[in-house]
Amino acid sequence: MIKLKFTSLLFLIVVFSSIHAQENSWINYSQSYYKIPIFKKGVYRISYTQLVSAGINVTAINPLNVQIFIKGKELPIYIQGENDGVFNSSDYIEFIVDNLNADLDTKLFSNSIDQGNPYISMFSDTINCFLTWNNSTNNKRMEVETDVNFTNYTPLNYCIYEVNMVHKDQFSGGVLTTFGWSVPEYSSGEGYLGGNINYKQTRNYTLNTPFVYANGPDATLETRIYGRSRNMHKTRLQIENNLINDTTFNRYGGVEIKKSFSPNLLKNNTIVSYINLLENTNREDITAVSFTKITYPRTFNFGNQSEMWFQIPANNSAKDFVVIENFNPNNSTVRIYDLDAAKRIVVQPIAGTYRALIPNFNNGERRCLITSDFMIQNVSSITPVGGNSTRFVNYNELAQQINEPNYIIITHTKLLNAAQQYAQYRNDKGFKTLVLDIEQLYLQHAWGIRKHPYAIRAFILEMF
Image (tube, rainbow, N blue to C red; front, side, top):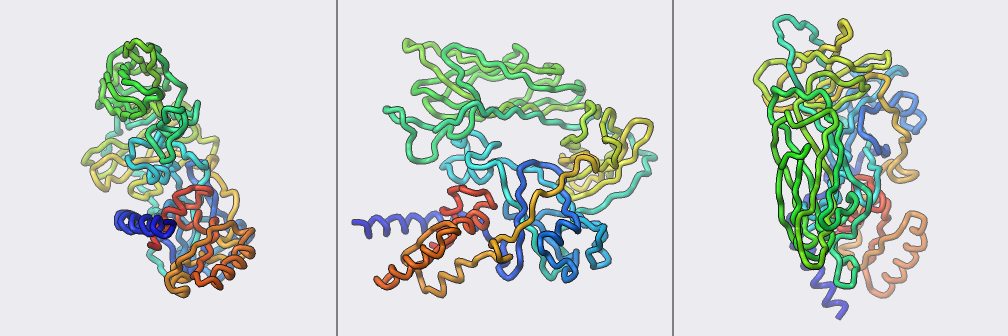
């Protein structure tokens, strides 16, 4: 019976593996890798001193060969002084992290809408990026833009700004059985949600939406609402008492709503209301919200902030001239980064404003960040991915050496010796045993997110 169940499971794995990309395809097992924990988006720098302290022999590395990966993709980076082919003591590596969403959690759900909160991981607030180097001089880089000739350019009237209130008042176990227990699979609404909205109740959330450009394009409201009781739900969505949407859904299901509305409805502090409307004899109607996001046209008054993420609206100009007011550089150098075009753009301070030309490479919206040297973060640590080794363990190669392993042991680094002893015992009984370090699976198959269950699933999908 056990063998039959394993065979059936193996068949399902083979079927599913054809629709899953390998999460470790970015790894070159002949290269050295160092892991860098990240828990906050922004601009990061790695100094020459940090590289040396991590045990990296910088004298043997051409800076042009350096790469940084995050979420399985290579990041465009900037390396001060790299063109001379030598790491000097004043050189540094600079990179931007702009997406710490719970993308990997999404893979655990049958449908993406079932994921309760796409912005907060259920397992960790920390991800790892990975520093490595190869023999290429054509790795991804941020291009420096130095044009400050503003003649013949007209300033843009507005940017596109997003304010996202992510709710995390409770952790929802998703769909419940009639006994009140969570079902075993990852299910609808599982993850972090806001507080329950009960029968006939209204829940208001206030979002800070200042400096609206009223003559701009429509604003949008995005949200997810989940049922938290076993009945029909009818929820009304309002902005400042103006009807935006009525939606009906069932039981523990979820709905994602994205609606356009006039920016004239927005105030400096805008109230978004969720109202449970359903009437039933049981007087039961419980829902909860995972996020409330408003995207709207905003003037280039940045409200004395020291760092702002914004978007340039779609247009067909060669370069976009921006004049930013009320930005606080903390007495340090200001820069704009175009994340979509991988540009590092010089900003010129003039009469209390900050001016820049942002090249238009696709006529579409472009994500940008304005910040200053004061806000740049130093990485907290740089350590080899294999403990004492800078190489990832190549389990595919080990599996080939074993010749189709049929017994797999997954264990922790501290228990590897004992696991190897037990593996030898199983081998003596006729099995072909492969021992895996769970920490390696986290790094290779879960983007360095510790304790993420997708690491094991991704490995099995790859192997079988």
